[in-house]
Length: 444
Image 1 (cartoon, rainbow, N blue to C red):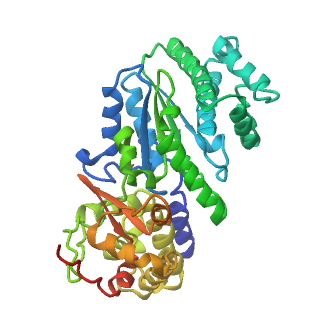
Image 2: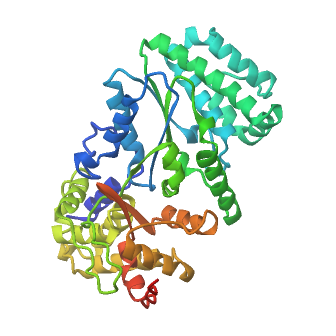
Image 3: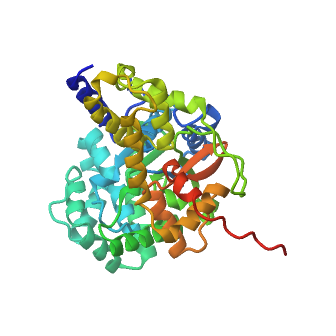
């Protein structure tokens, strides 16, 4: 093993954010759990259980880097196998990450996404249909977009998204313009159903969870807009005649009232630890490694670089898996890649053992980085989550906003063993374990 091979190893780890197709040789089946814990299969069944032409909403969530886009591609293939017509697109083709998400922007991007798909597949008939002419005329006259075309709509909306949303709000009442845009979207869905001769139409809108402000104030505003849009105004996000799957921020799953009205499925981190027994005592036994999860993480690396065992012993790779808490992005891009990068200075010791100085140094560096993602005022909350394995906000303002940030930075990780549970990142265990135990709750 030489330095060039180490570079190739690191290059193979760099594509973590690339969505894989289920038939890609790098795809690991069952990575997130057993078949009965497969949230994509559950979502698939939920969609097929509903009436073909009902206007249904489904939320799909998970922390960044868990593989949501890859799993949504698997959902698409499964639905196509059931003769459903699936239209999947990335919301970032229509919106910038820093733009505040609103009902106006979401409804418009879905309608534009439908138009772009039909333009690509049935251009000749679509451009002369009433579905397109009515929508494009409204965009040009009422919304005052210029040079409107189905193929160029995504770029036009991305360039003028703020002014477009403002104009739509000024046109009429929210219910009136919502109904108007939904009517345009419904007409395009009807056109799709007619052309494809498939009675079930499913729209998958990816990457909405990646919308965020760039500063603290803008992030707070974005957080509030997301809550308002997906938890308060969710009924206005429906598309007539179609089932819509929105990929939403993970903290929405913490709001019980959302799940009461919209089916929500969360993609968890890989379970490299067995589910702990809930015990709030400070002497509770720490979690134990889960062999099945560690085997999946090794398979993940094997499929990207089959020669990995020349660089790391299996025990060393397992140690990095445990340090990651099953967070795929952290595991591949920070921990394994970090060790492989430093391995060029330890070529005489390859493959590295779990107790090698290089492995321990990378884990320690990542521990410091993870600790710096927190502030002391958050430590009692993290201590409570580490003991209870639950994540419940004390209120819908500051507390929920704090949880949202901790989820976004993956300080708190989400797991699923049949039931959903939470834990703090394993690299934070020494810090949080060192805190004084809270006083016992007085008996009533």
